[in-house]
Length: 391
Image 1 (tube, rainbow, N blue to C red):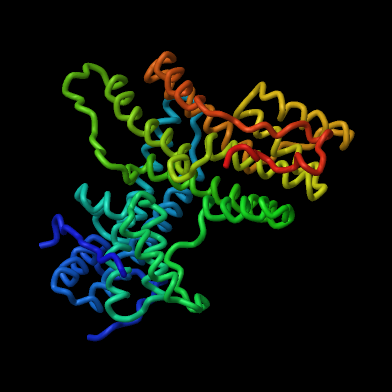
Image 2 (cartoon, helix red, strand yellow; image 1 turned 90 degrees about the vertical axis):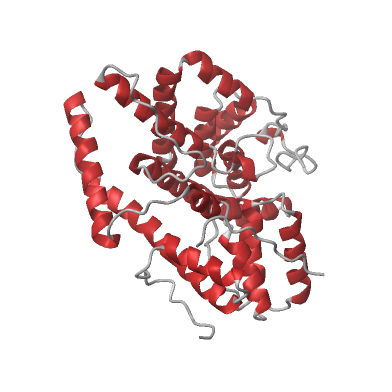
């Protein structure tokens, strides 16, 4: 039996239509979402589905354009001195806000409940039930999957997903609201890896790495522009500060904490015993080895060691690759730039909160039980499953 969705509406004061997801609505996604909640409360599921789709499409469009505005406005400027740093900061901020204002008008004033709803994909809860009510089980299934991905402890949504999965036979016409992200590609890669399809694993994991860099970059842009969406976002009280430098540090601290959270974007959504990025690199370097792409395997192993320096197993792997190649390949640019930026972020945050606090944070992250991959040059048929003890 389908577990019915019971929703508590917090703030919201035709027939079924087709939504063009590529065209922004004249109304903003907060207004559209509030309208959909009113229709949901009135059991008008066709209009709930329609306005929820419009809200999701508008938010996707705004997110894309914000990143484009920021990147376009950040192409010029230098941070080689304090004056040039603030010049770059001010001109970039004004340019980005002007770009967004030209596209969408005045910036949205989002209440906390709306920020939290879109972050946890709550609109998809209403959407899946509305699709169920109007008889579109395939779309209901897809919407339920999106919600469950961000609410893995929800027994209700898991029950809905199981129900839809038993009813649907053909998924070819399923509408994809969200493209596969890094975690989706990672899971595909792990599945291929488990089946010893190392070519497929390498392809999926490489895509996962590219998407990870893109998603962390976008996350950091949202931090820098003040559009970061996290619960409990509160600006610091500047009344007790006496200097501009003190005020700036307090404000910049919020930005750096947000950027720090970006690095753990997928950590809480997996059952991995290690941080997401090192685990991704670990699988990828071994898959590359299995497909005889030793240069790529070397680049990934070298990147892993910048995250976990001194790891003896990976050090041995790197030595093996070097001996086989007879040369030292260049660094993987897409990854080395991100790791260098992350390292600088950690250095800045450490300067703000203190080295003792940062050591405590890092220590908390190191309490994992890591599997043993073994030396690649000594692998045999019964020892070629990476992290075999982790599942």
